Length: 129
Image (tube, rainbow, N blue to C red; front, side):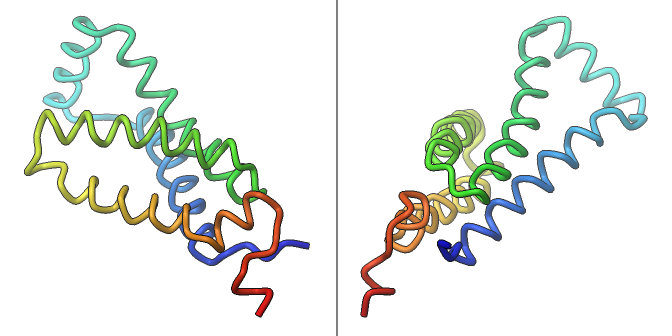
């Protein structure tokens, strides 16, 4: 049995909770101002609303499969959330700087030797010593 690094467990659960919470929260009642903004966004970008829900579910999917050691989930996380984080940062750097920093930390932790060994199913060099 492979030992899952603590960083992988924490990052995976963060994305499961955030994705599920955002998905459920999207169905809760909204203030009139927020409802108006959502209606305007939906009329201008009908496909964007679908992508919003896909993003919520992608967080849950990546998190759940990273817990199970699926290497593809780690790469999907990097591609999907990395792209979205950088895109948002380009649009509004000051507002999205914390998200970029957190994404960078998550990527660093998910691609450390211990995490890579976990996702590949091998034994890391640290465990061999």
